[in-house]
Length: 146
Picture 1 (cartoon, one colour):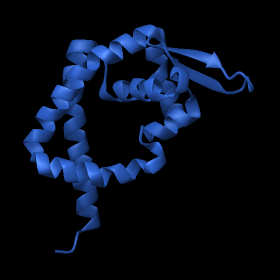
Picture 2 (tube, rainbow, N blue to C red):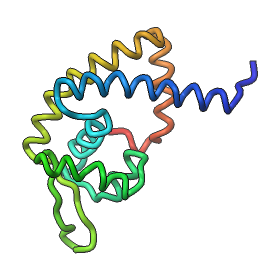
Picture 3 (cartoon, one colour):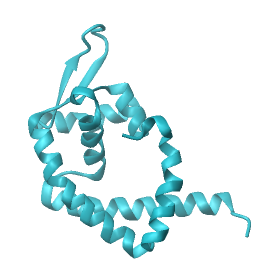
């Protein structure tokens, strides 16, 4: 059967929406975070020294630099992320994971794992999830995997 690119793209978008909605519900209830916030904190944790240029963070998350700035603002206000000037170029801002951000991320990881497993389990078998993970790994590319 020949794939229909539009149908595949729409189904992928719908699957993403369902997964994010369900994980968001648990994260919001238990930790006051959205799934996008969790992804941002996780990227910062994986970065050397817990620091990353905002532009690089935007690229890693697949959003615009202005989108990452909007997402960082409330996380900065509640103390999960801080802002630093780049040591060699004052025009560049670095996002920095704070100790409170590390603690919150650590506490939220089990919630995300449970919600994601439950949601994905409703959609696909374990074998299908493994195949999907291999396929979607190409989106990040080899240099982007932690």
